[in-house]
Amino acid sequence: MIKLYNTLSRKIEPFKPLVDGKVNMYSCGPTVYDHAHIGNLSSYIYADTLRRILELGGMQVRQVMNYTDVDDKTVGKSTTAYPNLPPKEALRKLTDGYIEQFLNDIKLVSIDVDAIDFVRATDSIEDIKNLIIQLVSSGVAYISDDGVYFSIEAYKKSGKTYGQLLKISDSNTSQARIDNDEYDKESIHDFALWKKQKEGEPAWDFEIDGHNIKGRPGWHIECSAMSEKAFGLPFDIHTGGIDLIFPHHENEIAQSTGAKDNPVMANYFVHSSHLLVDGKKMAKSANNFYTLDDIINKGYDPSAFRLLVLQSHYRNESNFSWENLESAQNRLKRWKNIAELRWQEHIASDSKINSDDFKKALNSAIFKDLDTPSSLLVVEEWLEKTENLSLCKPCLENIFYEISSIFGIDILTATPDIDSRTLQLIKDRFKARESKDWTKSDELRDELAEQGIGIRDTDHGSIWYRI
Image 1 (cartoon, helix red, strand yellow):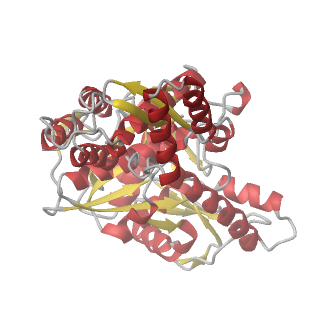
Image 2: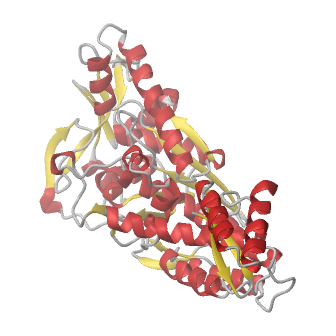
């Protein structure tokens, strides 16, 4: 049984989908105005891992992720970057480029993009307008001189709770409206659902209650419209980083349920915690702001970054440092060397190690609230049993298949067999050693090293590995 911490209930609960065997999961995606930083990527890695675990639990998962391609940041940057283009064209040109970069990045950290349905906010304008019309008609939203706003007071008077994900004190309530997409997280404001066009901004016509408010949507309403269009309400799981709990996800719930009898948007909210850098919050001003390109340019495998992320529980803060990344890369290299044992001539033909038992132990750990650290301990315990070549090739392949299924790190594909010429060099070196021709043996070892192949001499014979 899979158990998850539900931010709604503030406790770990058995996961039960609305429809047996099927899960609808909405993941807040990137705001595509810049490169995704490694903190963003960690949130998407955890969501990808959750999808994998649900599928291992026998469920069919549909995951939808949005692109926020119209908001304060995207509009501001696009008009600056492409001042000679019409606003909508400038917005599309900017966001297309960053969407392409985002997809490249998440593929490199082994997130299965084919398993995700991506939806652009700008392709959902009609759905957004229809939801806003419903909210105005129900009395929980109102038209103002600069757009359309959600009324938190009217929402609460309708009998619904504003503050489902966290406790919100009325003392923090402000009567002022706010049209910024991101604002003071200590205060509550009526927030913009639709913003009247400002000079030079992209805009869409919007006929509502006899008014044509040409403009664009606010940030929060986009996810409400896109998730409802994809799944209806309620749906099973909503994921995102912990920083989205308030105001974004709290406002999503209010918008999604404001015109509905059912106050539930999603049955489970699953939030991942922050990725710190050297124990501090990541910020450009602190000179500790990194992207995946920074990691790759220093010679690190993107899979090592994924492994670093999964070494921490998703609800605990994880810490990125170059030392921690080096440690993760060393672990990854060790896994690959063990996987390469399946190609050795001396591997056993049978084994006392049961890969089915490994799968049971691994699933038992990971099904407990996505406990990746405990699952990695299971992996290490079992891999220790394989290093003495007592494991047969099919068992070894089964073990790494399970590792790939859960952690998204495909060790088997990354460790192909050596070619026949390299194998012959290894055999020639073994013969040289048998005849005590140490000079020839050393020459062959050096030649192999130039090809990236190391040799470890054991009681079982010569074992090769990639350097």
